[in-house]
Length: 64
Image (tube, rainbow, N blue to C red; front, top):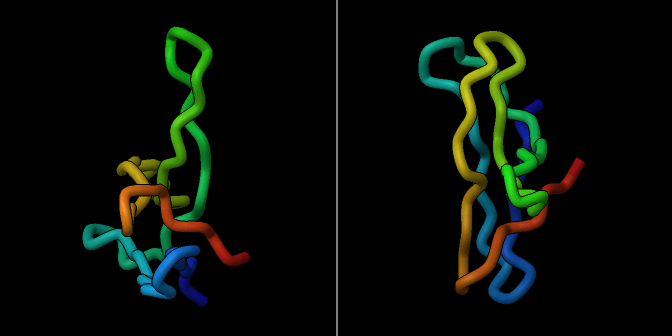
């Protein structure tokens, strides 16, 4: 099972996996120093993190 991100505006969807571990990325949030939260994708194996995908100028929604 791969985590799927889908655009709420146009319907574009992506599956994301870690190229190093071949593990499906999980949706998560990173809390910044100013208290704001940023949506990220995290590898459950190596705990690598990337900014979650965007489409049409906004974060894509995660479908669990």
